[in-house]
Length: 227
Image (cartoon, rainbow, N blue to C red; front, top):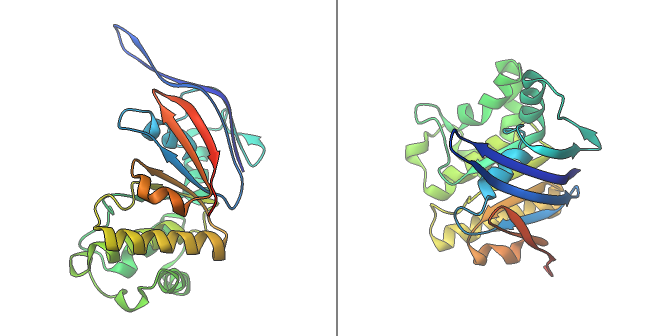
């Protein structure tokens, strides 16, 4: 599904050039549950911005489903990002004044679905993550784990090709973290969702089938895991 070939990323300033991604070669197959691990400042966030079509200013080749997107316009790349990738963040990023249903519905409306066309799809993903009964609630009425389930449903609602989960349990207690990781594992195994998990927490690694370790912008380990 994804292949990076000799990818380098620099941040330029008037005084210096900072080399933040260094000669990265990486392939990710459909259906994988991959962990990207590394300390703060290792380049994890920059790498997922590249993988998620947010950052297009890099050297090297990015092939998505066999096609290079390097010459794509910003508008096309934005459209591909909205349709192909779902994002789950540590901070949930829910709209407090919208109900659970409305938060999950929003990406469908951005993709020009009409309100009347969205109910079945929203209900389907809310049921998939176990919170259909919370559809009329507001985020502040939910626990942290329930809010993260809303965020996961929102990421899934457009049926993306892959999910990027950036420290998705960072704001949760250990018990709730386990519930969220079990949900991710279920989505991966039963639904076939391709998932890229970004973390510095080694306790999350056993849920994954493969681990990439990045340090100082370079991949220093690529290891298959026994799950």
